[in-house]
Structure formats: structure tokens, C-alpha cells
Length: 284
Image (cartoon, rainbow, N blue to C red):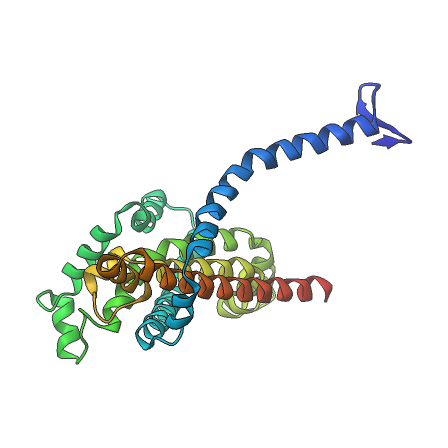
């Protein structure tokens, strides 16, 4: 409690308010100064890439159909994988947030395995599961789908590496929704699905959208698993590697710059939309 310019600390002790505020200000700036190392560590390499890129080549690659096709393929295959993950991951995340059971920590560890496994290993695991010689792969082939070197193969690879990013974020979002609100609605006669879609999902929406963004971003940036499953058709990371191995930095950097710009633009738009909706909810 502040009395005039004094801050009451309890036990009859007072501290000048200005001294406390100045100390608090210095402490927070010290933390920012320490943490800024990581921010600079992110910005410096990216800024260096942008400054050293040949912008004439960057401009020419914007008209390159191969580059445009690879960028678009990265965007929509990652979005498709994220959609499938959201469909099945949302119920799983809700279950994990609401239910305590023996072996829960083991299940959560299994969900997080794709984060720890090298992505080339993930690609080999997915390939062995969906190759035409495997039972699941043979079923897909008989159904008219190609599980290797196809758009489906890219989606399957993206799904494997992106699952933890959405499920973990969605679980934490549902943790933030009070079960008491759901229980009150149920006692008033609302069905489970009515409560889930009208109360739980809207209240957890911001965390769910953040999870979708992170899952999509993980899929867009994936290389290791995709290059095992489908070197062709090429996504942007695979094309960047191919141009680097064939022509060097000069011709791979422009594609990398474009991929960063596309991802950054998507991030900004989605974050602004989520922030705007949040303000509407708070203001309304």
C-alpha cells in the first residue's frame, strides 16, 4: 500500500515509493537485457541473410513457377496436416485436460516423442508405416492413393512432426477453462456436446488458434521427414536444399527469403486476427 510517496511493506516498515519503483524498473530492465541475447541471436542471422541476399535474384524467383509451386505446396500441405491434427487432436487434448488416470504421463510423453526424435528418423518411421509394402500403405494403394512421393506423403510427414505442437497447446488451453462452468451448464440440462461447443471451445479458442499456428508453422518448415517420404514433388525447404546443393548459397538464399516472408506474413495476419477477436470479446 502506498501512502503519499511511501510504500507500506508491513510490520510498520515504510519505503519511499520512488525508490521501490526505480528498483523495480531496474530489475525488469536487467531481465530484459539478459533475455535480449536470445532475441539478437534470432534477429542477427535472419537480418544478415536479408542484407546479403541478391535482390535481383529474389525478384526473379518471384516469377519462377517452380519456386511459387514449392512455396504454395508447403503452405497448403501444412494446412491440410494441421486440419487433420485439429480434428483428432482437439478431443484428445480435452480428454487430457479433464481426466486424471494411471499412465497419463506416459501418454503425454508418447505425444511429445516427435519433438525429440530426429526428423529423418521420423521420416523413416512414417515411410515404413505407409510404404506400398506395408499393410496401411498397401490399403492406400488399393484405394487409389500414392503414400510415397506425393502430396499425401508430404501431409503424412507433416502430421507426424506437428502433432505435439497442437495437442500440447490445446491441452493447456482447456486447462484454462474452469470445469465449474461446464458442470453448472450440465446441471441446467445442457448436453455434453452443447457445453463443449458453446462453452469449452469458445473459452479455449485463443490457445487453440495459437496451437494451430505453431502446428502449421512446424509443417511448413519441415524438411527431414518430408525428404524421406517425398523428395518430389518439392516443398520449399526441399527446393532450398536442392538449389543449395546444386548452385550454392547465391541461388538458395532468395527462396529462403521468400519462405520467411510468407511465414512471417501469415504469422502477423493470424496473430492480428486472434488479437482482434480477443479485444472484441473483452470489449463486448
